[in-house]
Length: 362
Image (cartoon, rainbow, N blue to C red; front, side, top):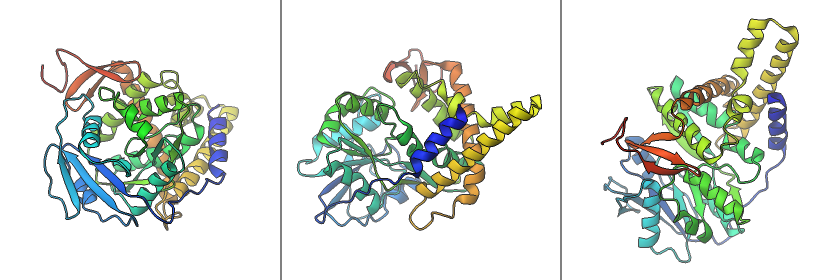
C-alpha cells in the first residue's frame, strides 16, 4: 500500500505542470509580512530587495517596530485574537488601502523574490480564490535543519506531493499566500483557529473555489537550527492540528507517509525474503520520489545540486515526522502555542485552557 501510494505520487509529479505568468502589465501588489518579534534571520529576509516588475508596497505588521530598509513600511498591530497572525492580517486589511491591489501575505521567515510574487499573483489573475507556494527550506547546516528540509522537500510531506495527492480541499501551507476578496472574507472567521490555512482551503473548496499552487517556491533559509526541540515541537503541533482538521487523514501518517524505517526494521527482524524484497522496492520508489522532488523544489539553476542530500535526508524527514506523530498521541485535543495552552475543537478552533499546565500563565 505504501509503495503504491508513492508510485502514484511519482507518476503525478512526472506530468508537466501548467505554466502561468503575470501579464505584460504587472498589477500593483500589497505584500503583508505579519510577525511578532522578528529574529535576525527574519530581519535579513525583510531587508531583501524584491525584483518585481510592477508597483509593490511591502508592509511589516508587528507590535514592535523593527529596523527596516527604505521602502519597507511598518504598521503597528497588537491583536487580541488567539491566532495573532490572522489578527495582524485582518487589522492590516482594514487599515490599509486594498482596492485595485493584489494582496499577498508572506511570513517573515520566507525570503521573498520577484519570482515568488509573480507566482502568487498569476493564479489570482486567472480566477483562483487563493494561491500558495510550497515552503522550501534551504541552507540547512545541521542535523535538525536537514531533517526539516528533508521532510518538506523530499518526502510525501512536501507540499508539491501533497498538492497532487490531495482529494477534495487542497493541502496548503500558510507561509506564502495570495488572497482574493473571497479568501479575505473567509479569513475574517478564522482569528480563533490554529491551522487557518487548512480551514481556509476547506471553506473555499466547499464554495467551489480554486486553490492554486505557485510555480515558484517559498524559500525559507534555515542556517543552523540547533536544538532538535525546534522541529519536534513544530511538527508535533502540526500533527495535533491535522488530527483536529482532518481526523480521517491522521492515521495515514504512519501508514503512508512514514512507514519506511519501521518496515526496514521489521524485515531485518523477521528475516523474511519476501518481506525484505518488498521493502527494498519501497525504498527504491521512495528514493526515486525524493530525487524527483529535489528537482522540482530546487531554486532556479540548482536542480541537480540537491540529489546527494535528497537520497539520505528523505529518511531523516520521515523519522522526524514519525517521532512527532508518536509524541502527539500523548496529549491529543490540546496544543501549546505561543506560550498558551488551548483545547482544539473540530476545524482547529482554539479555546484557552484554564489553568494552563504548560508554557503560559494561569
